[in-house]
Image (cartoon, rainbow, N blue to C red; front, top):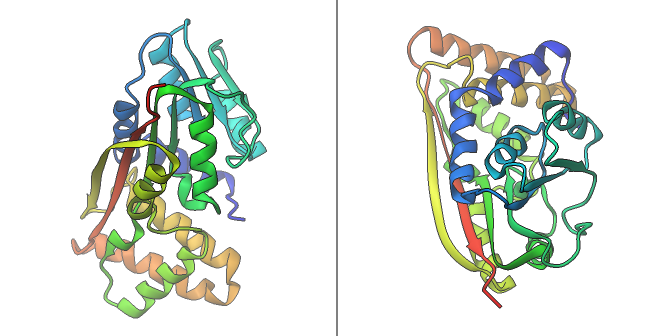
Length: 260
């Protein structure tokens, strides 16, 4: 499991509130289209940023339930959403949602499906807990659409290979629409959002990825530590030289449970 020291955690918190990840979060927020009184499930709520924003949008007549299996993430979400009486942070697994049928008007899951072993089972569970006409929004990266410049492409490819080991499914946006259709949903849209960075912005997605990928390589393959550190330093040097380039495309997939 990837772990962080306090300094790294602070850098990541900055990134999650930075322009790139805020824009990613805003895309799925807009596709969820929360309105006053909605009851929304935030599956894999993480540190609670999206949960908090949805809670403000649904108002006191609505409710947002954040579900996450990680005690550390739930603690962050609870701290962030403290004082919001319409937020409930709960423990639970995506494959066995602890809710009755037709419990939610909408459900959202951001950057979670790529870590799940059984997408058909999760899709079916979400279908079960959505009311007729309910909306599901899933946001995930298509990792085949990562473009990252390096003067040492073999080392770059090795870093990506190591990073891929933390994923279960690296092409969720390509596979999910057909899975949702088979589960009974009507798929309404598959909308891309591309991030490009040519300067290595301190609050950007690329800077966060360098931190995450370097830490993951060091923690999971200690023999690759020197290589990972050299790769990270190369990327920062490229930025200082004006030669940095990073781009990746995420997708927001919107589907509906048919009306009864």
